[in-house]
Length: 281
Image 1 (cartoon, rainbow, N blue to C red):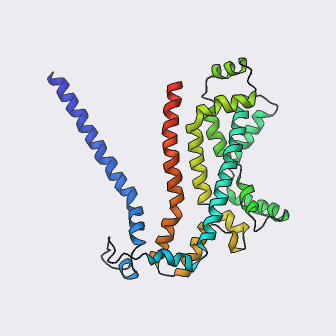
Image 2: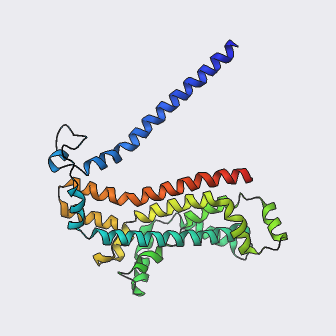
Image 3: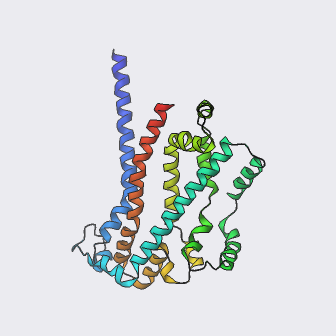
């Protein structure tokens, strides 16, 4: 009995240590976000005060209004939302089709295509940037939404991420669907996708975040400010606001809101899907 009590106490102490460690990590991770939000309400004097002031002496909401006065922030916001949503939807749709065909179908040149896709992950963007720009320019897509979106709708990383999950589906489920008269498309929509919602949610989060913060390609392909996205707009704001860091913080707070909303939505869907998938397995 004493041995069990000592063992239980030791396990409890380990849980407390692990909890304390995780809390410290959480505080460290949240510190920049808390500082950014508080700084967005500060005055210029508060921002440059030493020692640093955590809580603003005066809560100044005018910083958010200044963002819209200095740059066409709503236009940049709309451009980012439009391009990111469309790119994410197309990337996930194409990756699902590609992953399913590479895992559960058999066709000539399948292994070669998988090898080409795998090798493309090792090619840096700087190598393909100039040829891709020349191609898009020859098609007359400079300063268009299509010029921003189309070159980025395929991604080998998302395809291979989904392939790893599609391959984990038992072959018995696929064979049972075939016996029921399901064709390849129905097997994909009725069997594969419902059992890999967690993977698709994860891939969607990665895709959305990568597209939302994309900077280099939208900068290269757009000359008209009306087609530029938020990351480029924040750079313009830095030039306009000079040393007004509180205005930059206000713009940053508004910029990360869609990312937080998407993360919260997909995080719940991710946990629910993984739980259901485990129960079905």
